Length: 157
Picture 1 (cartoon, rainbow, N blue to C red):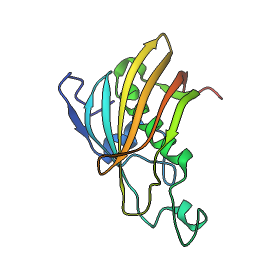
Picture 2 (picture 1 turned 90 degrees about the vertical axis):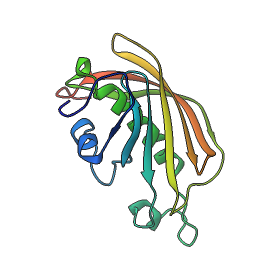
Picture 3 (picture 1 turned 180 degrees about the vertical axis):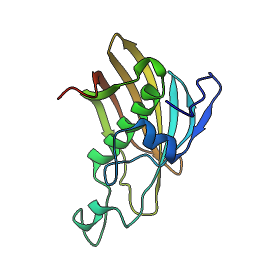
Picture 4 (picture 1 turned 45 degrees about the vertical axis):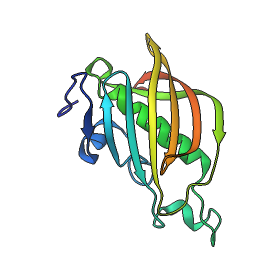
């Protein structure tokens, strides 16, 4: 990926580089910034949750709560950045195979900043596993482990 430093030192990644890396676009892009990444190992991603998010119009109007599946998707996208910033995986895209050990601890609401820590547990051939936790102001809001498979972008799913 152009513009990504592939050293083992932690690096930050802005939205322009995230858009180069991930195929997602508004309204499904759920990563605003990578605060810290160690290539092939871990990252800390941020998502600023605002009242302008399209899902808040229908998800508990009057008491908007970010849907849990979108919190999981934000964690998965952060994991995808770890993989897709590696030149070895150029032309591939991670697709969710399984989500395990999911726990939601508290709601995420407009004004929150979702901070996601993703750790790559293992990757073999084109299958791998990540562990994710999401926090708001240091308080755990969700956690999961996810298995993924890397597929070629140009082939139909």
